[in-house]
Structures are given as C-alpha cells and as structure tokens.
Image (cartoon, rainbow, N blue to C red):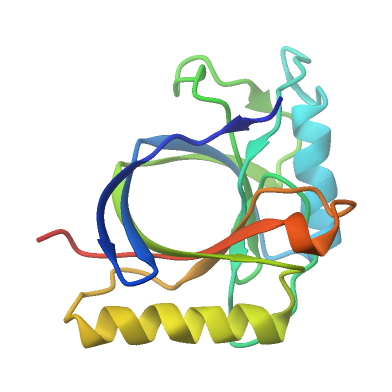
Length: 177
C-alpha cells in the first residue's frame, strides 16, 4: 500500500475542494528532462543516499500543468516547469531524511499550505489537464480567490493503471482568508 499525503478538506466550492496540507519534505531535481529527473529521484529512493536506505514511494505524483505541456510521469513526484520532486514519507524530518549522493538532487521543506483542488479521471494528457486547469482557475476567479503560485498536476496511480480508474487532480496554492 502506497502512503498518501494526508490533508484536511476545509471547504467545497462547486467541484473544487479547499484543502489544508501539512509540512512536506521533497527530494527535488531542477532543469533536466523529465525522464532523467525521474531516474535520479528513483535512484535516490532506491538507496542512492547516505546511509544507502530504501525509501517508500508516496502518492500523489505532482508535476507542472504548464500551458498544455504534456508530462509523462509515475508516482509520486512534484514538479513545476522542469522541476520534479518526490514527496518523502511523513516519518522523515529535516534531521532524519537520508542525504542525497547525487549533487543534482536537493532536499526542500515545504511549509503547511492551502490548496484549491479539482479531481478528474483518465490519462493526464495536455488537453485534458489544460481543460481542468482552466475550470479550476475559472471557479477560483469567479469566487474572488487569490492565487499564490502556479497550478500543478497530482497523479495518484502508476502509468500501467487503466486510464478510467486513474485519480488525477489539478491544484493551486491559494491565499488563506
């Protein structure tokens, strides 16, 4: 069973959930091709770290929505533009997280935050992702919500899962009331 990041739904607006997420630790690669970044991150959780410890993968995979840009990924990763990050299990703190051996990978702690999220099913390709991103932003703008960052895609299932059962979400960090 894959660990999923826990969150609290604080409000619902139409199809949009407003969620409070806890502090997270990310293993991050920036500025490289998607497949190269993924391999570096996968190697890290497979033991390319100090003390050569295997790290359980978590869900969701998070990647940039861009403007219709297609992103091929598996679970669990966070990315904005050419930035990909695996969300590390909740058991880790900044003091206990294994140190990466690859200099292209860095660790980052993300503080608690509030996200607006819309859920959808299917293979998360550029056209579907862009439609859902537009829908999310339209509802938020129509309700006067202030955005803090760019939107991103969260995927909960591996690529071999049939599209009709895949859980995907578009999220954006919002300013709290």
